Image (cartoon, rainbow, N blue to C red; front, side, top):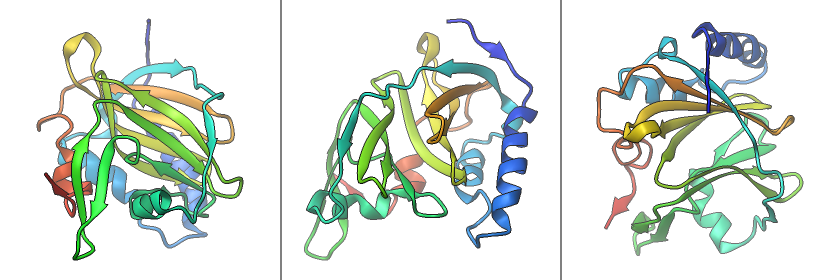
Length: 203
């Protein structure tokens, strides 16, 4: 599928316009997750130029029970919007987690596939944002404001792992994929165990 070449300022504009309004209302760290992921792989927003608008599957929705054991088990890994209206779930589909006798997370296996889901906490609804087989992987999420989230990871066009940012809007249910024009300086998909999930014991 053909992609469009988009100036890197596109992402910067989204961040500056949307997040500048939000900064006045919240004490959340400024784009901490985004910067941490970019820095880990030696990237900057200037590298993301190849844009593709994706179809989002609106039909895959399920209910959620916030009192359920499964929800509580993964709760600390959900990435919440500033107003706590939404959360992104990167892990519960693909990681097999338990807590040991010391109350620490232990992962006993991972699935090859990954579902990235939006949790609509007011409606108690789970909606799929993106589904990755072996050709993509989302490692991190960054809420830019209460209606825009960046999913940060890798996609694999032509058998080469390329850094990728997916921009998702819950309000519009729109998904935009933006690939980098260079490869990362570390092993792709190594960020999770090194940084975001480094408190989990992987067996």
